[in-house]
Length: 350
Ligand SMILES: O=P(O)(O)OC[C@H]1O[C@](O)(COP(=O)(O)O)[C@@H](O)[C@@H]1O
Ligand SMILES: [Mg+2]
Ligand SMILES: [Mg+2]
Image (cartoon, rainbow, N blue to C red; front, side, top):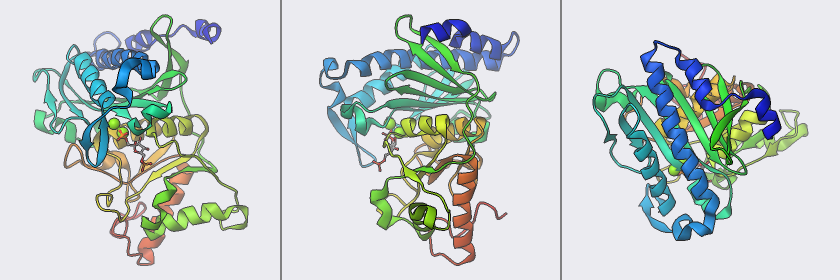
């Protein structure tokens, strides 16, 4: 691997210098903030790699949050990220692990939304987990800074702690992948322009919730499962890591579609994932790599958030397949499907 990297020798710092240029203050602030997040990621990667050697941290439940168990490592990740962002030009941070956004320096130009540790239910299974982030300009008012639509993002990224630690980044100029060299601590460019294949035969969904889905999702997955003999005329494959960062990275590399729709379980009407610090950064990364992301009604990046922690039904990945899922919702609309989620407005209707 090192041999390949020395051919390129483009480190995250060089990439960000090139992006920031000489006189662009906002881009320079974004670059400094990405480097701060990469610094937190470097430390978290080392901590995650210790596993049980880090003490009970990885396994210890320390509370309940939004119906999920909160691990000590969730909180440690939050603290590390906030600690690093405090040294960056960041005014305010909204985190999955804090009820309210934290003001760091009200005069600073940027706002950051973060899921400090995604997939934390997987920590003790040694599956990939990660940090997800979005960077916004503060805009008109500090208290609205994190409630801008995802289309206002200046940058977004994932840091995946897996067999390799990877930083998947967009600053609005395509989606690039960096790999952490644990010997030097450098993030080196591995893929300059990731491209999600437009078509796929692979879908990711938690099928144990099937009985709770609305008609459109039941029909879409049912048709995939019918394979070559069904209406799609293709055999499909299932993949579900239950760690969105890992599912998203697989889709970035070889295509696929990820679905976490709303369902009729209590608290899941709008799905499971959070708009501000999960869906928006993933949607920006996907679109910048030629993929797509929708809530079944419209583009994720066009939604105006109401609250920091609101949920959203999320479908992302290969562009043609995302459009295909949206057609099931349009048909449900036309056919009077009683879906509470998708009956009001469809992707292709004004
Ligand atoms: O437990 P389920 O229903 O399979 O949901 C898994 C999904 O929830 C998440 O774990 C939510 O993220 P957190 O771990 O940050 O709460 C996603 O990473 C994953 O895709
Ligand atoms: Mg998460
Ligand atoms: Mg999390």
